[in-house]
Image (tube, rainbow, N blue to C red; front, side, top):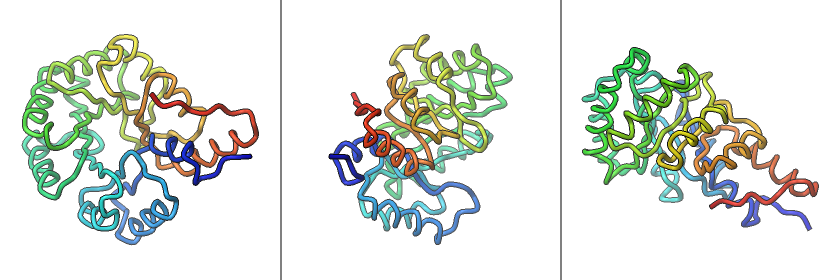
Amino acid sequence: MGISRESKEVKDFAALFHYGTLGIDKTTRHLRQDIARVLESGFTFKAYNVEMTLAVLTKELLNGRMRIHIPISYPLGNMTTRKKQLDLVYCQKIGIDESCVCLNYGAIVSHQYELIEREVRALTDEFETEIELAFVIQAALLNDIEIVDVSKAIGYGGGSRIKLNTGYGWGTSPEEVGLLRRVFGYTFDLHPSGNITSLQQVKQFLSLGVTNIHSLAAFEIIDEYIAERNAGFGEFVRID
């Protein structure tokens, strides 16, 4: 007997994903359509990712069904630290669960890691107990040494979660995740993001100990998982 979307196995697999309504072109109509799809599916995703302008309506529509995740200073992190703090104050005020804060790309490529450390420290000290923070680096635009060095700065600043890439055409590779696993082990909770569209990609990330996958193709990947399992050649995905 095959598995279906209603099975616990599939729902556990779906719970790996961050799904959502993202992009400055998204309207309340898009949001209502996307959330209706989620609610009708019966899935509880890891979190629902949405633009800050749609956060209040998202809370109303989800009604506590799942965590809400807000991106800040996308895609290149060039807001000031003070502006990022003010955005997080707003998130805190309306009861947002999580945020991914994009770190300043200019500071990273000019190797001003002390600025990165300082900003991460300021944000974690003020908000970490209220909002789960992930710090975003554009790993696809960095070399290996820069990826490692900026990750060190995040760690020195008290950060424990790194989101690799924002999407917007930049996607995370298993090699980027593997690099940080080799250097830091499981010091960081790593969040791959961007252009993740296939079950094969997801399996590669899971083999590297990833438990948060950001993908707007979550439904298609879940359908691929169900089809593979029902064809008899896929394996049950174990989530540690």
